[in-house]
Image (cartoon, rainbow, N blue to C red; front, top):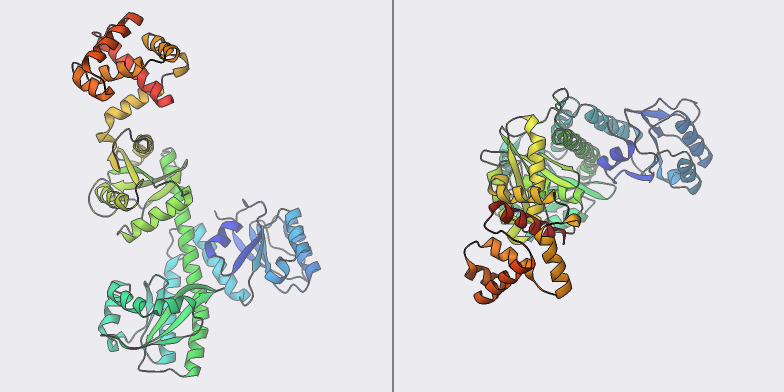
Length: 514
């Protein structure tokens, strides 16, 4: 499901602004065009579009009718939606109120919203998803090419090729490389960036001509913007200046293209949100009756808990890991946040999306950004094993963060001993400590001695008093004297292996608690 605020967030602020959030949890299943002269406001689950509203009173009346009909929200032109009385009415009825920016046609808006809602209802369906929009982009590319009689590519704001026109056989080697690689080659990006082309593109609202360069013919570049936001561009290989009439037609095509790019971005965002929700369900608790349909890497898997330096909240961490993974070659990262931790499901094989690949990536990132860490749980051979692997990964991540085991990337098989001690220590109640350690703790506090640390070093290096003394920065004879004094204060049988183990666990529990 998708609610009104999430729907608006997915499309972006280029067209909308949420004025009143309302209840927020109501599902949006369709859009309804409301006529101010008619009493109908759709049905439960509809996002109502208030077209033709002439004044504040009509806007307030529509909001009241929508609230009475349990609508999921209402969209009104910004001039009315941002009026104080209209906003107060929406707040009183706890109804989501969205302001539509000027210049957007209601017909285009309906097409955009229904595409995103369909995608939310069937996130894996190519019919309701990206396939139709991508095909329309190729049609738009051919239309733009016909306007200027030149081969065209449509690119997003990351220089990735989304569509291209026919007639590319009459281009230059750079264009061919761009289409084959589905993005502008790095050396060409460097060339354009050095000449300020991308800086101009990020600010421009009108088409401009880029002069020729080495193996690069001149290009007419048309910025694609919506509400001031730069979404992408049209690149046409031309022989020289283009007529004002053709330029104007291309600008009109760019405004149509902007809606397509908004829809693509919104659908991708909805699909990503859906995938994250389904992966959360799978990682939280396995249920054979409701196993989500997810595109995971080949089995067997591992769940990896990921961490970044302080300063990021969990949604930011999730976005950063998603972006980093994609840039490094993981085309469809299996990522989700659960209980405040970012988690990844990776294969136990090779290549992008595997633990070996992720471990290397994290090691490289940690050199530039200390505090970047990853902890991998045990192998999961089926969906039923994923929650256990997730619990192990989260537990190990905590030990890596506390530097009880070495990072930056570690798997559970390498830290089984630390995890065993951690679990045993976690079961001890330090407020009810008993035995010899309780006596030593009381003595240390009362007499300002350091006998607990002395005993800990002695137990850590059995039969190696010189090493234990070095750990405490003491002379060996001083250490022996202290151990003799400890024996006088408490009854210790250090020849008993169970007593030694119990003491070590108690000492570790006290250290962890403090």
